[in-house]
Length: 222
Image (cartoon, rainbow, N blue to C red; front, side):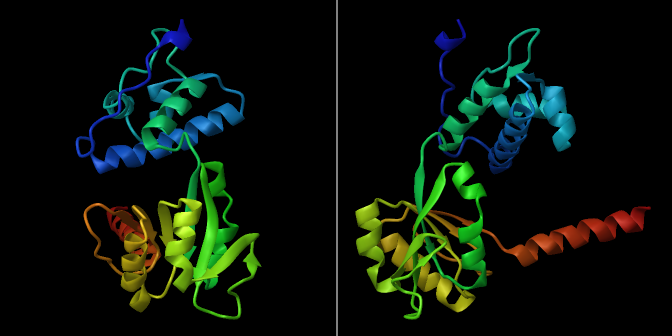
């Protein structure tokens, strides 16, 4: 019976390449699109074709975490979605703190994609007295001085940094001291943190540089 099928084993940290984890998120998005359009099953070939990977790459990536396919059927979309969410840790709801309410921070508060994947921004922090105490996009805004108290009260473990570069390291240090264990940093600067705190850097200018590199090289080859 399908419901008796064991859950996928979780691979020990460090044994799965970062690129594989990134592709898992892409597989998840595409599977969710397939379900949205009424598809119950898919195949490694279909997933790979849409995302620009080979079917062998798809199967190899998923094999890090278990066996998910069925002979003659392929992958059952809903089942694979549930398995990937479990692997990524998004089979639960994550309360998130956002620090910095400039243009970028406010745009992030308006982004509905976080909630769709299980991430809820429950508190925002700034040092501007003009907005502290208000609600922006229905999220309460606290002063940065209240960081430790609020994070502890709301049991927040993930945070987003959207402050100017000179303030990013100081904010990251405060977040780590307050008990945050995962940080998404949008400030265009590299931050240093204890190994116990995982962080991801998102520099939009670098992403555009990578895009321009790809375009320039494509043009030179054509």
